[in-house]
Image (cartoon, rainbow, N blue to C red; front, side, top):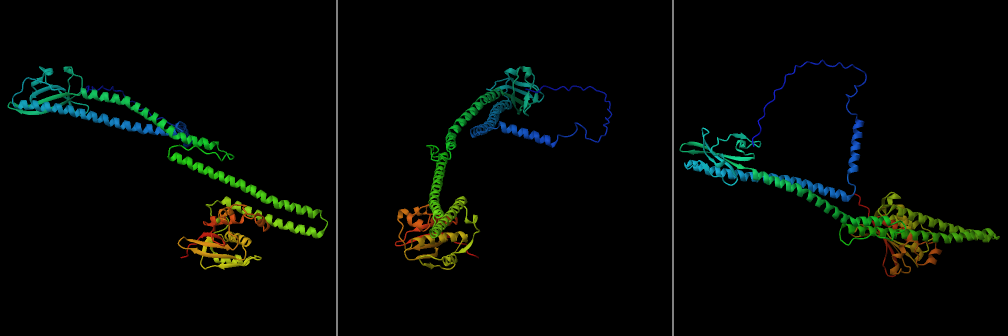
Length: 510
C-alpha cells in the first residue's frame, strides 16, 4: 500500500521582535533556582532508591531462584520469539517473491515467442499480471486489470517496489516482480504482483500464539521452580530448625539426615559429626571439672585437718610435724594448680596453633636439652642412661619441650625398678625426630595404653597419690607434643615401658 502523499503546511510569518536581555542584578549570594542539585541531595536520593530496591528485592533463596529462572527463561523466550517471527516473515516473503518471479519469467517467455494473449491467467497467490510496452501501453493483463490503464509504480516503505492498487479496489500489501522481455515488436515490461496477505496472516497468527504461549510457559517455569526449590530446601529448613532447637544442655540431639545421598545429606552428616564432637568436648569438660574438684577436695580436706589439729594440739613437736605435712600438701596443691592452668592454656590455644602462643619457636637441640635437663635433676631414685647423637634439632619452645621431657622423666622414675633410659634419633625418611624415655618397670596392659593419656587417670591411685601424681603429667606431655606438630604414644616393647615422642625436625640451615 503506497504511502499517503504529504502536503506541506505553509508556516505563517510572524514578525519577530527582539526581546532585550533581562538585566539580572548582581548580588553577593548565588541566584536562587539556578544552582545544580547539591551533592548531599543526590546522595540522599540514591540512598532512598537503594533502600527501595533492597526492600523490593526477594529475600529468600526460593524467591531469588524463582525470579532468576523466570528472568532467564523470559529473556530467552523474547529473543527466540523475535528470531522466529523474523525468520518466518523472511521465508514467507521469499516464497511469495519467488512465485511472482516464476510467473513473470513465464509471461516474458510467452511475449518473446509472440504468443502473448490479451488476458493472462493468474497463478495461486498472484494479485495481477500486466504487460506494457516501452510507451506505457497495456498489451496484456490479468482479468482483474482488463481494460485498466498501466499501474503506477511507487516506492514501498520497506524499500521494495510496489504499485498503487487502491483505484482497483486492492488495499493489501504485495510484492512485484518486474522483467523486461524482447519481442519481435520491441521490448516489453512484465509486472507480476503477488499478495502478502498470507504472509501477514501467518505472522499475526504466530505472534498471537507466542503472545499467549510465552506467558503460560513463563508461569509454568515459575511454578515448577518455586515448588522444586521448596522441596530441595525443605531439608535445609529442617536442619536449621533442628540446630535452633539444640541448646547447650541438649547436645545429644541430632539434625535429620535426608534419604537422598546429595550435598544436603552430607551437610547434615557433617553437622551431626560436629554436634557429636561438641557433645564429647562438653562431656570431657564436665569430667575434667569433676576430676579437678575431686583432686582438689582431698588435699584440701587433709590440709584443713592438719591445720586444725596443729592449732589445737599443745605439743610443739607434734605441731611442727603437722605443719610440715601441711606444707607438703600445699606444695602438692600448688603443683596441681600449675598443671590445671597449663592444661587450660593448652586447650585455649587449640591443636591448630603452635607453641609460639606461649613461647617463641626456635631450633632446639634435643641432645643438649636432654643432657641439661637430666643434669639439673637431683634426688632421682634411679640412674638415667643417655643415647644422644649430635645434630638432631627440632623447632619448638625450649621451655615447653623441657616440660614434656620432665613429665616423662617423672613418670619413668616413679615406675622404674632399676634404671631409666633416654634415646634420641632421627626417623628415616619421615622428617621427624624421636625422643624415647624408657623404664624397666611393669608393663602397661594393652587396653590401658591410651587410657593413661586421659586426664586424672592413674593405674595405681594409691602409689601415684603418695608420690604426688595427679594423672596430669602424661596428658600435658601429649598436648605439648601435638602443639608442636608431633605426637606422644606408648610404644609396645616387651619387658619395658617406652614413651615415644615424635617431633618435626628443624629445616637444615643453608
